[in-house]
Image (tube, rainbow, N blue to C red; front, side):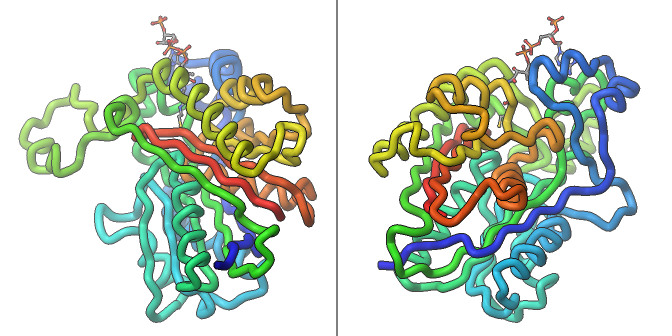
Length: 335
Ligand SMILES: CC(C)(COP(=O)(O)OP(=O)(O)OC[C@H]1O[C@@H](n2cnc3c(N)ncnc32)[C@H](O)[C@@H]1OP(=O)(O)O)[C@@H](O)C(=O)NCCC(=O)NCCS
């Protein structure tokens, strides 16, 4: 059995910086409210005409990751593309990325697990590598939230939180089982599906039905979030799944060189930091700059942490996520 090692990381965020004050000028919110509740100061939004899409941002992040991994696109055996905001309803963004990378025929799979999407994708990639079926796998998380948010005061509870961007990781076969991904846990609890969801347009609410009703009060095509319920479940599930991965590796909190939590909310990360008695240096946060980029948040953070020299040979890394579904998961990596 092989292990999977991350041999290259990349990130891309649109140039357009949207500050809390920018949002305050178009909806009833304030820098103080957003910072206090979420820790977010800025986020990036795709600008109409800047050429970005979910797949294109994924492509830009992938090119960097491939270069750092020193491999060519044609050496990729599988693409796993995690997103909740695909370019099209179908096909998935994975095949669009495959075409952008000019890879003739390799499997491309979309992973639909929202904020936990990258952990689900890593876990899936790891299994394909462990069995020996594939050698190099490109795992991407990319989100284009901004165009689909309710940017009026009505949508402020959701729209101030989310940002656009992409991150990519190249996983490759590793024969030393003390290196690379050590263990992963993934979970979901569908009874909470609607608590953080976007119902229409979907097969549950087809576009002709929405158009027929022509109801200006219809908000089914904007994301809905029961913020307090999400918060309550997130702190419990993050804690459980981090503890689980520590137990599995026989690691204590002190052994963690870097915990990279999905950037859901700075308050959630701070709660986890306190609960596991971790120092500031042991936890990576960049939600202040990018907001919550859902499936892209962990690969963006991982890439940025690596760029800042916070991940080195032998570093013990824990990744953890919670989000819509509800879904959650964790992965431990020895670099
Ligand atoms: C979203 C969240 C920040 C809201 O904070 P909260 O303290 O729960 O706020 P509430 O929803 O109870 O709203 C409190 C008040 O702020 C108002 N409010 C909501 N969004 C606002 C905004 N952007 N600006 C100003 N006021 C806002 C509400 O209307 C409400 O006003 P009221 O008391 O007059 O009715 C918080 O619930 C949260 O962080 N949840 C987890 C979200 C998360 O992590 N999501 C990603 C999961 S992957």
